[in-house]
Length: 197
Image (cartoon, rainbow, N blue to C red; front, side):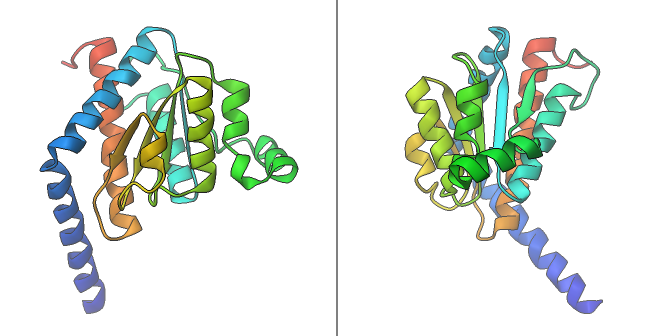
């Protein structure tokens, strides 16, 4: 048990340090505010949010889509959001016919329209299927956001808004991605439906 206590303390300290680093970055705060505003405007104009990631980030994509469609913290009308990671028939067909790298780009081509927003989640900023999705958004004129880590990888040059979470491990980066996701949904809820009472 002693080893578990030490590891928990180490992980909590790393998480706190990464969050403090994020908090101190004016650049990332401003980028996030611009991205949140873009999502608000998307919803005001009748657009939809599509989210994608791999592994734990796929789970985060589904988690965030749920917060928009159901609710984050209060009762309100549903907001249209979809994780591009949940339809096993679509995923296996695209993977089989076009390759795993095209998993999201093919769905973006088929589902998204001008005025929608794509949010990619990649701790490395280097996931080939996220990069291909961002390239497709660029070619179609669709606004894109990416939550990533490290130095942003290739994603930072492809996304309209690249929010880079600090942290030296995937777990710490993913923890900040969840804070970003909940804050994004909270911003949209407060603007579209008014401040909660």
